[in-house]
Image (cartoon, rainbow, N blue to C red; front, side, top):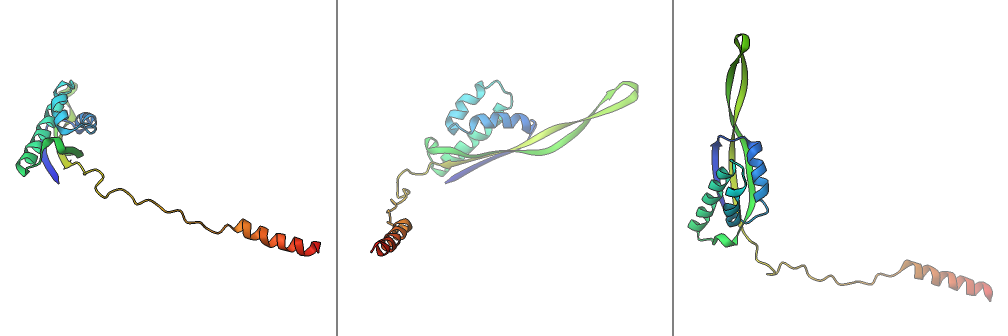
Length: 146
Protein backbone atom coordinates (compact mmCIF):
# COMPACT_ATOMS: atom_id res chain seq x y z
CA UNK A 1 0.00 0.00 0.00
CA UNK A 2 1.24 3.48 -0.85
CA UNK A 3 0.72 6.65 1.16
CA UNK A 4 1.35 10.05 -0.42
CA UNK A 5 1.87 13.51 1.09
CA UNK A 6 2.51 16.67 -0.93
CA UNK A 7 3.56 20.17 0.09
CA UNK A 8 3.62 22.85 -2.61
CA UNK A 9 5.08 26.33 -2.85
CA UNK A 10 7.69 25.94 -0.11
CA UNK A 11 9.87 29.07 -0.11
CA UNK A 12 13.17 27.18 -0.10
CA UNK A 13 15.40 26.46 -3.05
CA UNK A 14 15.08 22.89 -4.41
CA UNK A 15 18.87 22.52 -4.28
CA UNK A 16 18.85 23.03 -0.50
CA UNK A 17 15.96 20.60 0.00
CA UNK A 18 17.52 17.89 -2.18
CA UNK A 19 20.61 17.84 0.03
CA UNK A 20 18.43 17.04 3.05
CA UNK A 21 16.26 14.57 1.12
CA UNK A 22 19.30 12.53 0.10
CA UNK A 23 20.09 12.00 3.80
CA UNK A 24 16.64 10.61 4.56
CA UNK A 25 16.20 8.16 1.68
CA UNK A 26 18.12 5.42 3.48
CA UNK A 27 16.23 5.91 6.77
CA UNK A 28 12.81 4.74 7.88
CA UNK A 29 10.22 7.54 8.01
CA UNK A 30 9.85 7.44 11.79
CA UNK A 31 13.62 7.59 12.19
CA UNK A 32 13.84 10.51 9.73
CA UNK A 33 11.35 12.54 11.79
CA UNK A 34 13.54 12.06 14.87
CA UNK A 35 16.92 12.72 13.20
CA UNK A 36 16.20 15.56 10.73
CA UNK A 37 15.72 18.37 13.29
CA UNK A 38 19.34 17.85 14.34
CA UNK A 39 20.76 18.04 10.80
CA UNK A 40 21.71 21.75 11.06
CA UNK A 41 19.81 22.55 7.87
CA UNK A 42 16.93 24.99 7.92
CA UNK A 43 15.15 23.22 5.09
CA UNK A 44 14.93 20.02 7.18
CA UNK A 45 11.91 21.40 9.03
CA UNK A 46 9.89 21.54 5.80
CA UNK A 47 10.73 17.94 4.96
CA UNK A 48 9.85 16.81 8.50
CA UNK A 49 6.42 18.40 8.11
CA UNK A 50 5.70 16.47 4.94
CA UNK A 51 6.96 13.15 6.35
CA UNK A 52 4.79 13.64 9.45
CA UNK A 53 1.83 14.32 7.20
CA UNK A 54 2.51 11.11 5.26
CA UNK A 55 2.75 9.14 8.53
CA UNK A 56 -0.59 10.63 9.66
CA UNK A 57 -2.15 9.65 6.32
CA UNK A 58 -0.87 6.10 6.83
CA UNK A 59 -2.33 5.98 10.32
CA UNK A 60 -5.72 7.07 8.92
CA UNK A 61 -5.54 4.21 6.42
CA UNK A 62 -4.75 1.76 9.23
CA UNK A 63 -1.09 1.12 8.39
CA UNK A 64 1.47 0.86 11.18
CA UNK A 65 4.30 3.46 10.93
CA UNK A 66 6.90 0.78 11.73
CA UNK A 67 5.99 -1.11 8.54
CA UNK A 68 6.63 1.85 6.23
CA UNK A 69 9.65 2.74 4.11
CA UNK A 70 10.36 5.59 1.71
CA UNK A 71 9.42 4.63 -1.81
CA UNK A 72 10.32 8.04 -3.21
CA UNK A 73 11.05 11.58 -2.13
CA UNK A 74 10.66 14.09 -4.93
CA UNK A 75 11.83 17.67 -4.69
CA UNK A 76 10.55 19.52 -7.73
CA UNK A 77 10.97 23.13 -8.72
CA UNK A 78 8.04 25.48 -8.20
CA UNK A 79 7.48 28.96 -9.61
CA UNK A 80 10.08 31.65 -9.10
CA UNK A 81 9.51 35.08 -7.61
CA UNK A 82 11.39 37.60 -9.70
CA UNK A 83 12.78 40.41 -7.60
CA UNK A 84 15.37 43.13 -8.03
CA UNK A 85 17.84 45.14 -6.01
CA UNK A 86 18.80 48.75 -6.74
CA UNK A 87 22.51 49.29 -7.25
CA UNK A 88 24.75 52.21 -8.11
CA UNK A 89 24.05 54.67 -10.94
CA UNK A 90 20.32 53.97 -10.91
CA UNK A 91 20.65 50.43 -12.15
CA UNK A 92 18.71 47.33 -11.16
CA UNK A 93 20.07 43.83 -10.54
CA UNK A 94 17.48 41.08 -10.85
CA UNK A 95 17.44 37.91 -8.77
CA UNK A 96 15.01 35.07 -8.27
CA UNK A 97 13.50 33.61 -5.12
CA UNK A 98 12.97 29.94 -5.81
CA UNK A 99 10.18 27.69 -4.57
CA UNK A 100 9.89 23.93 -4.23
CA UNK A 101 7.24 21.24 -4.32
CA UNK A 102 7.84 18.27 -2.00
CA UNK A 103 6.25 14.86 -2.65
CA UNK A 104 6.81 11.95 -0.25
CA UNK A 105 5.57 8.45 -1.06
CA UNK A 106 5.68 5.80 1.65
CA UNK A 107 5.13 2.10 0.98
CA UNK A 108 4.73 -0.93 3.17
CA UNK A 109 7.56 -3.41 3.29
CA UNK A 110 7.19 -6.43 1.03
CA UNK A 111 6.69 -9.65 3.02
CA UNK A 112 9.77 -11.81 2.97
CA UNK A 113 9.93 -15.38 1.66
CA UNK A 114 6.29 -15.77 0.72
CA UNK A 115 6.68 -17.58 -2.57
CA UNK A 116 9.07 -14.97 -3.92
CA UNK A 117 12.03 -17.32 -4.06
CA UNK A 118 13.04 -18.52 -7.47
CA UNK A 119 12.67 -22.23 -8.10
CA UNK A 120 15.91 -24.15 -8.16
CA UNK A 121 17.26 -24.68 -11.63
CA UNK A 122 17.81 -28.25 -12.68
CA UNK A 123 21.02 -29.12 -14.42
CA UNK A 124 20.46 -30.64 -17.81
CA UNK A 125 23.28 -32.63 -19.28
CA UNK A 126 23.98 -31.48 -22.79
CA UNK A 127 25.76 -33.79 -25.20
CA UNK A 128 29.34 -32.76 -25.49
CA UNK A 129 30.45 -32.09 -29.03
CA UNK A 130 34.11 -32.77 -28.31
CA UNK A 131 33.40 -36.35 -27.26
CA UNK A 132 31.46 -37.03 -30.44
CA UNK A 133 34.33 -35.75 -32.54
CA UNK A 134 36.89 -37.76 -30.64
CA UNK A 135 34.87 -40.92 -30.99
CA UNK A 136 34.59 -40.36 -34.74
CA UNK A 137 38.32 -39.63 -34.98
CA UNK A 138 39.20 -42.68 -32.93
CA UNK A 139 37.07 -44.82 -35.24
CA UNK A 140 38.90 -43.44 -38.29
CA UNK A 141 42.30 -44.04 -36.68
CA UNK A 142 41.43 -47.57 -35.69
CA UNK A 143 40.24 -48.26 -39.24
CA UNK A 144 43.55 -46.97 -40.68
CA UNK A 145 45.62 -49.03 -38.27
CA UNK A 146 43.98 -52.23 -39.43
